[in-house]
Every structure is written in structure tokens, then in C-alpha cells.
Length: 337
Image 1 (cartoon, one colour):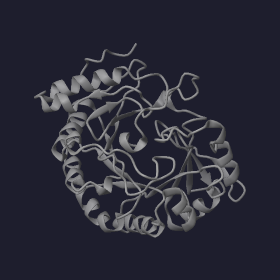
Image 2: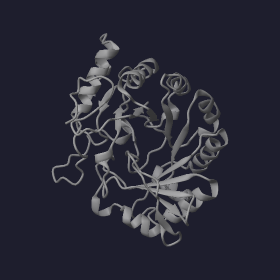
Image 3: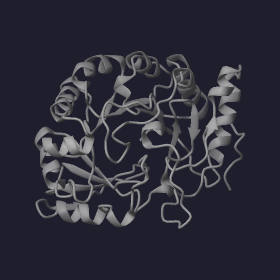
Image 4: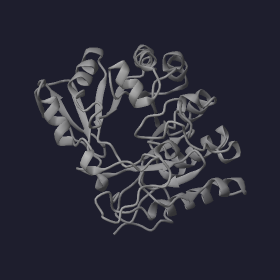
């Protein structure tokens, strides 16, 4: 039997899972328009006063680290590199005690310029989204001709020492489903780590359909047309990716099968949106408001109590396979990937 939500020190849910990995969305805005995330015209962005300030973000992360046992902090968006206070936020979070491991998920545009400052601030590593190596396909998928900028961002991150540099790729039927081997070859040639992710129902247009999704089995079959893959003997733990040794190792490739092989039973994540809402799951339809409590004078202990209560209500699974599944009303750009 798991402990009650009022207990000190951890973010535990009714199923005994403990959240130690915090994902923080810094903004809902993005400088790309990826087809699986938002429409071409963009979305109604959050108004300035609705967003957490830099100081509020740091305070809530400090509560998570010092009072709730969080050990990993990853900054996401939208696109976190467009947050003007990013370097200062990373500096403050990296200075917390006990020091959390600090990472960033980005589309890579501008990362070549910011990587040295982020590394100096205390950022440990980055995940860069890259779904294709073909310039025309990139423009089709993102609606922006910025492939060269993303590749420069990857190189800049590696040069700054933000290792391991990981690539996140989503394959979509009829668009880039044939590119798994090329993406892996590119990653191997540059000493990056590739993670291929099943497309999830998080698009603002609600156009996702399971029968058109490229599955983990299809991804692995495509990779095996070029590479020999063998199970990774390393313990997976709470990591979302199932990893495979490539041609005997030591190089690895990961597949994140959120839909066909859900890993909810080992999930250790909690999420904070750019407007200060706690989400117990990426696919949650409920949120718990910390921003209002913070701005009306709640002390750190009260913020921690509210956060524990929010996580106590986490469901056993994301429910994508449930016939009654409801896609989150807010798109991925607003809640962080």
C-alpha cells in the first residue's frame, strides 16, 4: 500500500510510482509549425501575464527538488530556446542543492549560438527534434526551410560538450516512414544517440489515427534492413526508450513505443506547464493550478502539498487504447513534450 499524498519528501501516486523527473514547459510558442503538433497558422498563444515568470519557474523547480525529491529537470516548450531568460533559469536550477540533472528538449534552431552559454550555466545535455534529413521533407513537415539551422544546432551542442546529444525523431506514414536507417546512420556518423518515437495523439488538429501510425515493430523492421539489432542488456528502469545495440554495440538506438508498448507502470514523470499547471501525465485531461496559489501567497510547504495531491490522482495508464480515450484539449506545444 502506498503512502498518503500528505507525506513528506516524494511525489507518490496511488500505485506506488514516485515522480523524480520534472518536465517544465517554458513557453507555448514555437518557431516551427510541425504538422503533428500545430496548424500552419499557429495557435492562440498564452497571454504574457498567464505565463510563469523566470523567478516563479525557479521557485517551483526549487520546491520540487528540495521538498519533493525531484532529481531530473528537463526544460521543454513550445520551443524553450526562444525564452529570453533561459540561461538565467538554467543557472539558478543547476545551483540547487541537491543538484538535479538538467537537460533541454529543443528543435535546435539557434542552439549553435546558445550552447556554450547553456553549458556554462550548468546544462548537462540536450535532445534535439529531427524527423528527416531531406530539406524538402523538412519544409513539408515543419512548414519552415530550417534544416540547416537544426543541423548546426546539433553540431554546436556536441562542440559545447552537451553530451550525449540525443536526436528525437517521429516517423509518419506517407511522409518520412522510410528514413529510420538514414537517421540512424547519420546519428552513428556524428556520435549522436537516436530515439525514434511513435506518433502520439497530441496534435492541435486532432488528426491522429492509430491505423496510420508507424509502429515500433515497423520502425525496428526498417532499421533491421540495414543494421543488426540485439537487445540492450542494460537495465531500462524508468527510461521511456527501449534500447538496442547496433551491430553488436557499443552504439545504441532507442524506440519509444508510447502507444503500442506503453511504459506507464514505470513512469516517474511530473509536468509543469508554462502557465503553472501540474500535469500528472502528458495525456491528462485534468490540471492542478500552482500559479494561483503561488501568486496569492502560498508558502513552499503549501505548494509542495498541492503538488503531492495532484500527483496522488495520477491514473494507472494514459488510456490511449481505451475506447473512451479523450485527447488532451491542449496541444503538445502548450503542455511540453
